[in-house]
Image (tube, rainbow, N blue to C red):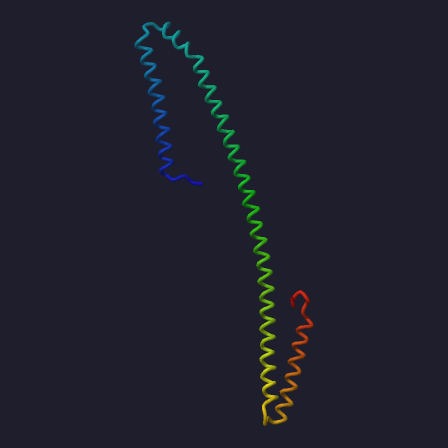
Length: 168
């Protein structure tokens, strides 16, 4: 995640203030030692007193480095876990999308079949009207009965071709 520019500038400013403070204190200590101790042997002895402090600060800096590496390793592990969770979520989403696609495909087939059956039923109703209409030419009635029979056979063929699972 990217940090806003303001956050980066404030962190940089904080670092610069701390660094300048350390440099100022270092220079001030050198000036105070030089002005308060008259000879070089006293100054050297006084400086030797801080050898242990120097080792302490070096050790603390090293401990801080080790701690930082440890924290980065933990953050890396947490990131790995997040990525694994995201992968599982994406996989679940893909599976659901595949199931939805199959269901929609099946629904489209069912809709097409229903439309065909409705169209055939409409034609059969039309031919029934032609057959039952009083005063119709017997030739028209005969053709209407033949067409109605062929449509009924077509419906029977369509129904026979269905799986039992498609009818449910």
